[in-house]
Length: 427
Image 1: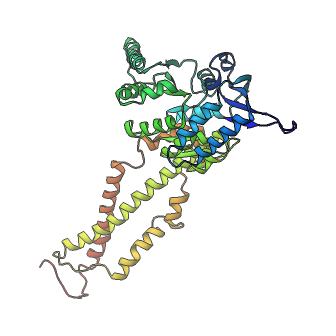
Image 2: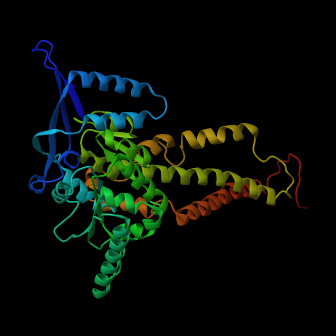
């Protein structure tokens, strides 16, 4: 990013200054490893002095390119390339990118809850790895796999070599390739571009399924969104994306659930997200508490709806059997209209003191403190513990049984009665 300034303190100043700020890969690609190994984010600064006449010519070209309806990006890119050249290096900044409080503990709990954690960042590889260790993405027993290919041919060879080496190591240990294998993949932006191409995609997918954690460095916003879509489409996973900057907007919008963090990098991520958080550590509360409660509530309410409607139909079914399938209406029209209202808005017979819709919104099968202390409880949703075929058919059997009780109690009560209102059915 560049800015052009002119010294107004000098009358008729014949020159203007161009100051440029950018990533080290754009201005200077060396002498940053030392800062990166310290976990610092590096930015280089440069400037250029140009004549006022040349600036006026560039200004006209810029305004003309800005008005173009087609090819606007190409024109602006050519203009910026003509300005941002022959720069004089000014210096470098090394900024400590501190983690928020609770981030390492949050990532640890996410793993305990059965979630795979990936980090997609635009930072330099060395900086990103140090942050990954500090945030518990990688641990001391994690074996890192570095994918840093120079071209597509190297990418294919490295993928084959990595998969073969991992297979050999796991066979030597007589273990299976599963989620518990402690491998961590580190891939840079250039290699990621090659890995996302169709000819390398299958091998890349096999590699990331082996690894417990994935760290993508120097990733562009488009690459972040492409990875999210890849996991959704090819791995059939549910993806939650969380970010705090404008570079994370496309990733957040591509995920099943987008979470934005409000902070110093603006509100673009928050405005594009489904949920907004003030701190990263609040993600555990969102998932393990509110996510768990919502799953329990939805599962029980949906099962109740199946039970309620099935019981109504089965009651009519019993009546038709004992009345020769005469198509006679066994239930008064008023009851037909009131039934759904009574047994949906308020289940007075099963829960005598509260409405069922309120139950569906307020039910808490466990305290929030317990859910936060035991993230493993979150896995109940992944294994479909509350809502599955067994619970569905159990509710259907319950509805069949209770409909039989309702009908046959009334049938046997009036079987010997002298009350007659006509007769139809089997003789």
